[in-house]
Length: 251
Image 1 (cartoon, rainbow, N blue to C red):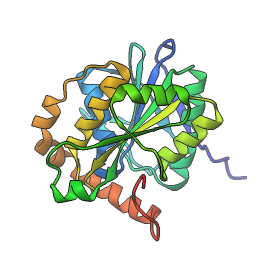
Image 2: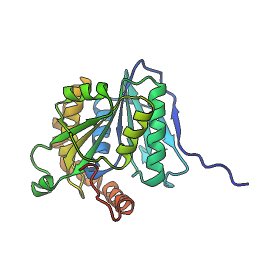
Image 3: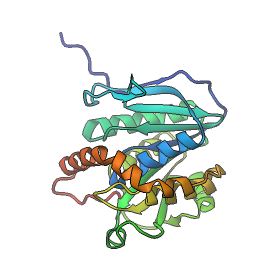
Image 4: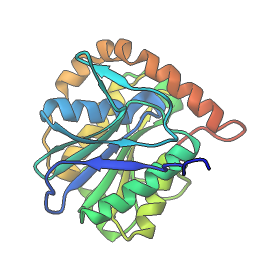
């Protein structure tokens, strides 16, 4: 008899902070979520406190400082937790991960879970990623909408959210867990550190983090070079997942 499929396993060995804020970044347009989350971990000197595994994951382990690690990490410091994926999430994996993250956040009595991502923008493409990226925000309850007001993100009044973050919003709503998603207008086919910087500035207002984004802007070219391969993998995954459908995370 075949063994049962392991949907998603969240292994969190860190201390249980009271009412944490959870930030989730996965590779999508412009790698905004991954770049922003990695930068937060680096700047805040957050410690790795766990990982996420699933039989739906691609057969990949990442290597940092000659040590293999699971490609979806959990970092923490004080009452802040960051979930960071270094592999694209598609299909069943995206759905099941969103489901488990929502339930996990509820079990931790999280104040809010915040998704950070990019949304392809024609204006951003025309400017070749230069200038200030506009950030829009969407929430699933009154608490998340009040939090978004502090972020200075533009309200996303009407439209559609799709992909992993739509599933995250859906399952958080089902679990009565506050959730917000910040979407920065971004390049579609290239890493966009500028859009990631704009998302972090919005997070600063939402969470009172006060993270300096100048180093991120200064290192933009190095980040683009370092993340080219992940961008290619993400494009291929998104092309497969959105064939015949609009590729934008919101519209």
